[in-house]
Amino acid sequence: MSYTATRTVAAPPRSVTAGLVLGLACAADAMVGLDMAIVNVALPSIQRELGVGQGVVQWVIVAYGLLLGGFLLFGGRLADQFGRKRVFLAGLAVFTGSSLLAGISAEAWQLIAARGIQGFGAALIAPTALSLLAVAYPEGRQRNRSLGVFAAVGGVSGSLGVVASGLLTGGPGWRWGFLINVPAGLVMITLAAVFLTSDRVGRRTARLDTAGAATVTGGLLLLVYALHHGATHGWLAWSTLALGAAAVALLYVFVRIERRTANPLVPPSTWRKRTLMVANAAAFLTTCAFLSFIFIASLLMQQVLGYSPQLTGVAWLATTATIFPVAMIGGRLTARLGVRPLLIIGLGLFAVGAVWLTRVPATGNYWTDLLPSFLAAGIGFGLCVPALQVGALAGVPEEDSGLASGLVETMREVGGAAGVAAVSTVLVAGAGLAGFHLAFLFIGILATLALVTAAIGFAGRRA
Image (cartoon, rainbow, N blue to C red; front, side):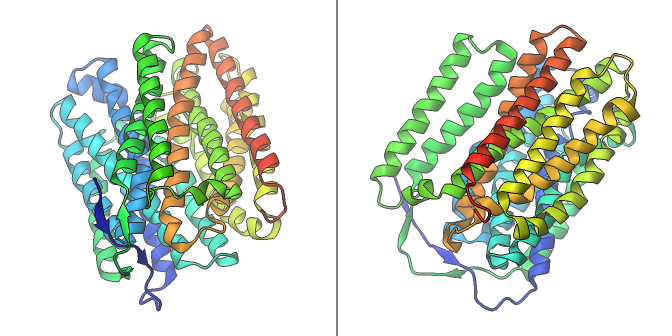
């Protein structure tokens, strides 16, 4: 089944400054990133208040990541087809409404359902926000700097979510982690509706590839779920294998559909863009390593070193405060040095930071055992994020910017889910503190693989 859609291009003279677009895009992406991590420290409190088991409360995280990862690519293509402003507003409305529902949930199933809807809204917001920047700024120095700011906000939002989770859980309560999105969302909806310029609608020449959209969304949903399922039920369990096989089958059908349809969701020319493909592979591995790092280090502080939720949140300020200025500088350095050098330096630092924690003792000291690693991770990741976004959008036509944004955001989300699932398995394979040491070594290997991918894939200085 297909239906007619319109391809959109940006209106020529902007009625607002590109700075406002940057501000809205950053604020929206920060909200999405915060909610990805804001329940991590709050899970025990949610479990106690709602009276549910660990297996049920874990779905508060899984439901959000599942819908976000499954619909990102579709959300990016919707922005290209129906207009970035429309899809951006729709995503903000869905996200804000579901945040209110999550904050007032009285039962676990209500909270899980609201988190799933939040994930769908986030899947519309994230690629559209990046696409808005790609259109607002011409390729070159201005775009690199704007992507540096965007990357700084996006990179810091994950670790800031952990900080906010600890402070809110220990203060007014975990519900405020969701309710705080309501006034913020309403302000952003108002500003976007009033000040963003609508895309100019062209003639009706394209049909939205609904068969491709359905198969790739279903395949990604099953893939993300299979990763979470495997971490808790075992990678060789028949249910995990069945889910993985179904995901691969749907993605295979998607590839077949794209080869035959006249208006593919992902045009074949996309796969021939070297920098886009390498950036996606590097983004997958980098996010895989970084979110695993946050997850395992948070567990280490609480389960081994005896940190409280509030102290765990505050401890992450070192990484949070480092990522932001480094990513700002990284956006400018990318214009001078190119994507490849920044990724090699950043991923090298991050790998060293992860391996540093393989020596932390059970009586570890924050200043000598944790802080050097947290600073290295913050600097390394801060350099990587703007470089990856510049690489993913380099040479991409304006009408495909939503698709390119959706692809790189999908790789980041699926990479994060894969990383947390894999590192959880590695942690269980060890015994106590030895399991944590093994997990940090695994994260260092992931960062090294990302480094090798970037070094080989981005061949030239200005790749």
